[in-house]
Length: 586
Ligand code: AGP
Image 1: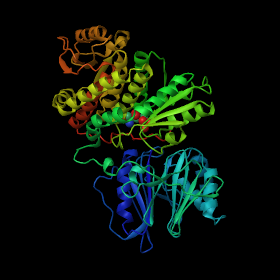
Image 2: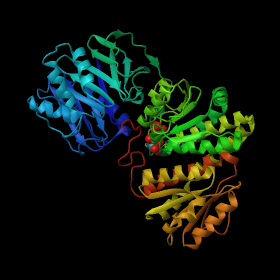
Image 3: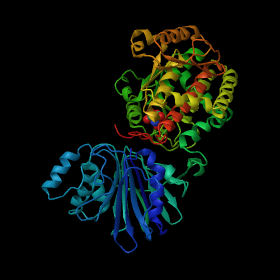
Image 4: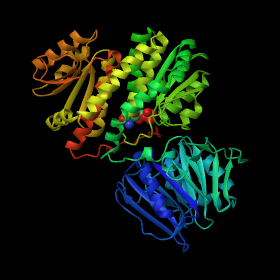
């Protein structure tokens, strides 16, 4: 889940370009950062720091080649020594790594026996020393990197930098990596958002491919180390769309972009929605899979398909699907949802599904991502880069696609379109008048627990809402099916405990209202989110009834509540502790 970046070219500003690249990748991990840059005077400059980059800058020496890394710690604590880049004993090789070298302990003890000295506790440093060791008996660096690949196990992406030769060797197995081609310069990064400020010409490496970059240009090798043509593709989004603009945080920017994004889906994606509906219609069972926020979108999908299209669609958490996919058949359809398209639990699950020859349909926000390239059929969210770790616009965009596909299956697309437009107007209202949610956050910030209840599709909304609040405010928020309250959860309710109830005017209304009374009786502070007020609510947040699409404004309220709770607690809503935007390690 780290971010790795490399630059080679004619510019003398390699240092600042690498630092800017790392800032764009920092949402992948922000425990520490570091660079290794060959100065034009020939010396290798290494700088490493704990924590976020923030406003740090590098000394402005002329340089035209270097690498950088921003870390999400897996092996070894958050220390300067464990920060990347790591070098070999001779400092002739510097590496940055994203992934886990699963067999690092065995490799490390072998290398120690051969006299290598290690400076860190990381799995990654083994790579630098192993290259050094292999290079002793093999001078062809392509062969050395091939051997390296066969020695290390696990999912990895590595940039190996040889300052003397001024060359990079990049290998990939599982973890994402992209090459970018500019005017007499090349960029390497964990994802395209760090390259787009420089060029839209990118190449997404496939597993077991290798790239060599040097003064002579670029060479791509397939897994048999045979040179291939590099088929660069052109990215569709702009660098500007990946910037914060005037917003204080990416999270608020991305929440505010939702009305435009959902309107765009309604107006421009009918053809794609129809194709997806046809795939579901012709499949022998459809299985929605996703992780985290994507899993809650999948759960909501099962309710929407049942209620709207009278169709049973299965759902599994991405990291669990590997243990319950044995039933898949050739004409089964696995419908994978992932904003990044790189979540390893999804990638390994769909690999298993493909082994079963199941059809793969994906809904992702990342053109060219691993999931995008593995799928038989792709739906793109067109939500623009999502930089805040807490997913907001990608969630409502996913719900909008699932909602319209269900209506397409039911032959009621226009009714769906009407209700979804109503929901879009409602979220515009909520975003414009967010002060009431801001003041609610001020009242709730000191609570240790918050509970969110709902029935039916609102239960799925409650789970996603709790995740948003947990992720950015670190308050222990829990989402529950309101019907489960009396089966145990109610024991957690004390005087003043905040309980949010999603209570749209649908078949769940009366039963959810009973739950409101039950928690009120135990002293809870009851927050009712509904189109109809009731005296049982201590706080009422009015949301117009948009039919089954009401889940969307309901969750936007929780997104804003999470955002303001984070601010009230002086936390960074964009980079919550211990998290990263794209989970690429198991
Ligand atoms: C959501 O806010 C979190 N960042 C996380 O749960 C995320 O949804 C999950 O890691 C899945 O990511 P994906 O959609 O990129 O696969």
